Image 1 (cartoon, rainbow, N blue to C red):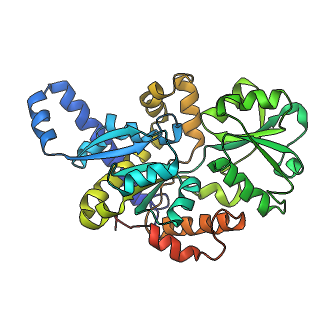
Image 2 (image 1 turned 180 degrees about the horizontal axis):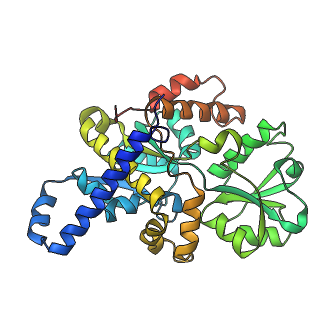
Image 3 (image 1 turned 180 degrees about the vertical axis):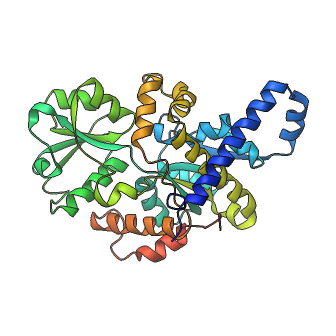
Length: 340
């Protein structure tokens, strides 16, 4: 089992290459080499990478652009802010309208089960989902939400899936002993204030900002217990690209892994790079969010494949994917070890 997290030599190498990429970018800017840069850009492989520009968990994506990680690996990456459904996103990748995408494992696994030709090549980080209650409610753990109503931004959201799994693990039926009510994400806080729900669950930055602005209690998150070292955000690459141009799939994956490690080591700088995408949050808040995530945990290889299989098992337990699906076989089908 091999992860970038628990291999000190690998992490040291990533830090070194991250520093080098940043240093080279600064050197080019200092000495002013526009013609050389333009000439070099013509030789870069052009790719389209889809992402949700409003999600702080995707901060390594703009970091990879700004700090030169994509260029370092010979890539000219166009970022596509995708606001449609996950099925539409995966279809766009599978059919070549986009070459890759970054998203949430607990939203992607169900459509991947249905056969989209997209290969997961690496985990990006863990953390960023939270369930909150009012401090006056007396609700301090998930058991306290039995029989209560939880507000979510959509009934297939990663947060809804994750906390349904968490309820199942503590013996609470997430369908019959917990009630879920959908609201637009910006109205979750109001629903809690009005007493329409007793808790709210979503992802950062929305849920973090509500916790801070409304002084709410964090009942649980997706870094508790066995999930402390489990990714939630993943990179998916078009299957045909993996098969026909493995070197490019590898370059893209490696660039994002290095950008992720750089984000872990430079949360303030990463927050500043991401900040234009989250005008409602200040840089200090964004940096605090990044520090709470596990950007040092970005598994590849067998370790990542095992995490996919574990999530498949989890989603079977709450009826999201078919009970008859073989989790290990599924993980082998949707994963590709392009780094090996």
